Image (cartoon, rainbow, N blue to C red; front, side, top):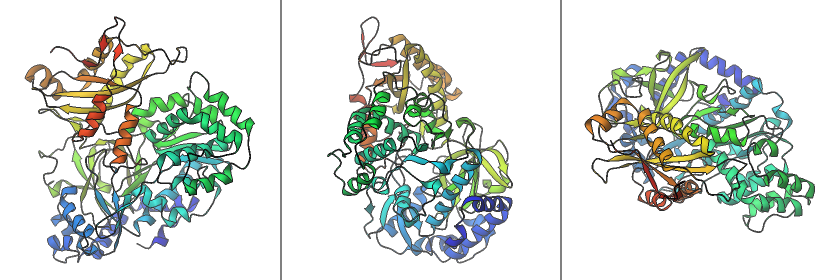
Length: 604
C-alpha cells in the first residue's frame, strides 16, 4: 500500500475514516488479497498454499498460530536469512514486545510502510478530540514519552520497541509543526536513552510552560503516575532550576542540556514560588489541576489492567479531568481508535480500522474461555474463525491478525467484546489478555476477574485512609496445595494525618480483604478452595512503598521499555522479581502492636 494514500489530516482524515468503515468488508477483502499476492512466494505461505493466491484457499489452509508458530522464521531472519521467509518486503526492524504482560519479550517483524499505517492512525486522534474538546490548538500538550536504547539482531537488524521506532522515525522527528502537536517536551528529551534524565527534563519543561498546557498524558496510566511520583521526589530541585535559570548539573545528556537551555532562558523566581507553594501542600489531592490549571483532560491507556490506576488519577486530578483513552495498538499491529474519547473508562470502545491489517476473530464464551475445548497453544479449528464484519453484538472474541510484514493468522491474545458498530466496522471493548492467568489446579483466573475482585476488596481499606496503589500476583506451588499470593502496595492519602505517622491497619481488615478477593473470584476457584480443597488459602503480602517502582526498574534493566511498561499482573518465572517483592514485605504494627507481615484468608 502506497504510504501517500495514508497521508490524511484534520477533516480529511475523518472523511477517510468514514469511507473506510462504510466499506469495511471490501477494504478487508482487498487487504487480504494484497497481502496474499505480495507474499505468495514466501517460504511460510508456500508451505501451505504452494503459490496459490486465492483468498478462500488462504482461509481454508492457513493455521491459526501463536508466537511459537512464527518464532523459528523470525529467528532465522534475525540470524541473517532473507526476509522472504515470511514477507516480500525487506524487514527494516524487529519490534520488541514489552515482555511484561505475557512472559518473555517477542520480536515482531516490521517493514517500512508499517510506519505509514501507524502515522495514519495517529493523525486521526486530534481531529477526533477536536470534535469534543475545542480550542486545543491554543496551547501545549504535556505528554511523557520515552525511548529505549536499541539492540540489534545477529545480522544487525535494529530491535526496538514500537514506540521507540516511531519516535526515532522521520514521521515523528520531521513532522510538520502545527498548533495541535505543540508539545512541552523537546524532542531531545524524549529521545534521551536515560529515562531519569528524560523524565526530569520533560517535567521541567512542563512546569515552565504550566500556564500554556491544555493536555496531559502518557502512553499508559502507570507512566503518568510514575511522573507524578518523580515530581514528588524532585520538585525542590526542579523549582531551584527555574529560580536560578540553570539546569541541574546531574543532567549530563548533551541533547537534554542543549534543549533545556532554550527553555530556561532566564531566572524566574515568581514561577518557582508558585510551584513551590503547590508542591509543599500537605495533600497532593488535585495537584495536577493546581500545577496545570488550564488542562482539559488526561490522555492515557486506562483499559484492561490499567484500570487499576483510575482511582489514583482521579485523586491527583481531584476528579475534575476526563480520562481519555484514544487508541488501541500493539507491537504486532495498530488496530483502531476511540470515537467517543470523553466516555467513562468503563465504556471505552475502539473502532477497528479495516486498512490496518486483516482481522479475524475466535469466538469465546462469556467468561473469556474458548468455545472449543483446547489448550492455549493447540491449533484453533479454522472453521471457527469469524471475519471482521460478521462479529455479533455483545459477543466475546479473541483477536487474530494477518499483516503485510509476515504475521499470518497470528493470535494477539486479547479478548474483546463487541459493543456496537460505526458504519460497517465493529467497535470493541478490551476485556483482558487471555494468557495472563493464575492457575493452581482446574481454576483459571483471568486478568479481568482478578482486577474486579481486588477492586471490591480494596474498598475495605478506605475507612483507614489507605490507598492501594499497585498489585501483582504469583501462583505459589511450593506448598501442597498451592495457593494465590497477592502483593499489595498501600499508601496513606489522608491530608489530615502527618506523613511521618505510620500507616496502621488491623490484621483482621487485611484478612477480610483476602476473604473478599476469594468470594469475588469465579465458581471454579471457589469450588477448588471449599470442595475439592485443591487450592490453599489466598495470601496478601503488603510491600513497602516504592517497591513497584523498583520492580519496574528491574524489568527495564532486563530489556523492558519505560514507555511500554505495564506492571505484570502475574509473576511467573522471574526469580529476581519474586526475590525483590519478598524482600520488601512491610512489617505493620496493628492496633494490638503485633508485627504483621503476611495476611491470609485463614482456615478453610
